[in-house]
Length: 92
Ligand code: FES
Image 1: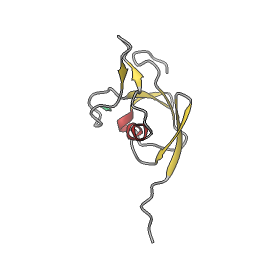
Image 2: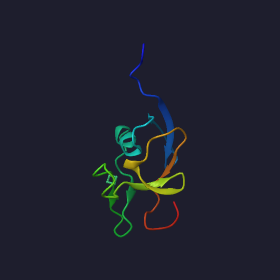
Image 3: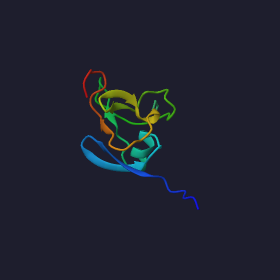
């Protein structure tokens, strides 16, 4: 008998613990966890979050394990360390 339940994995966003379904995109996992604010814009400090969910708008860019990545294009995996950081700088 097969199960339709997804494997839950743990990850962190700005040092806060989260859980989500392995294979979901990071953006979707954060949205399902109630986290929509992913970063602030570099010019005005305005809140930014996922918009297109297909890799075009870049509004969801965050630091994933030290690399700038669009959250909607990153599959969730166990132990992922995510930081909002300030996009426009070279460090998380
Ligand atoms: S939501 Fe647009 S690139 Fe991720």
